[in-house]
Structure formats: C-alpha cells, structure tokens
Length: 161
Image (cartoon, rainbow, N blue to C red):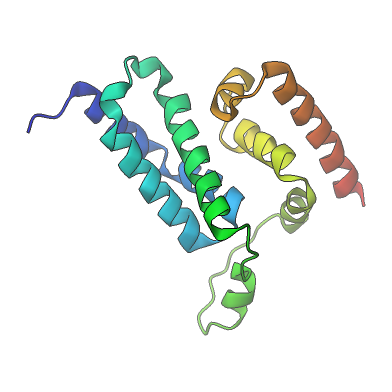
C-alpha cells in the first residue's frame, strides 16, 4: 500500500516533537505509563485518519487536538482516579537517577487549576502561539489569554509563598 505525502509529513512531525507530546499527556494524567499510552494511542488515531487532513499547515494543532481529546478520554474512563505519584514509586526502587529539577516551579504548577496549568505549559514549555492553543483547546482566543494571564498571576503568588 502506498503511503501518502501527508503520512510522511505527520511521521516526521511526530518524531521531531515526541517530548512535547509526552509532556502534554503527562500534564493530564501525572503518570509516566499512562502518558506513554496516550501518546501511542494519539499517534495511532492520527496515522489512521491522516488523509482527512487537507492542509499540512494545520498539522500541529490537529495533532495536539487529538492528543488533548485522547487525554480527556482516558481521564473520563478512569473516572479521574488519583494515581500513585511517580515520586513515591521511585522512592521504593533501588536505582535512582540524579535529576535536578526546579521543584518550586513544579510544585507551584501542580497547585494551579488544570485549565491554567495546561495553557501555561502549552505556551511556555511547548512554545505554542495563543491562537494555536485556542484551536487545540477549542476555546475563544480571549478566553485563552485571560486564563494565561490569570494563571501566571496565580503562579507568581504561589512562587512568592
């Protein structure tokens, strides 16, 4: 079976941005394995329906939308159950990696409501434009702007504490 040009473009895009996709999925479920499953399922969905994408210009927002919807589906199926934190699991393991993170920022981000945390993450960690975020989340641009600035204000307050 012959692969379409769009299939090849999608494949290259996925490989180039795999870390961003994982980070977004992880921001929803806070579990490494679940995040990997979400990314894998999103890739499968995208590859299965790549021919429905008429313009490669919209590939990024189209794929992020699939990723967000898949993440939300997983949360709905799980009934938003709380997961054992990966940190607790790592504390019980024998081998440990030396990883130095900005724990203050991570803790402050974790305290934000999900809709603020997601927009901040997409904007500053995935370097998406506000218009792209609005398209991905299927929200009004002004709503995204308001949530971004409100989230940043809450983050600043949290970091000052």
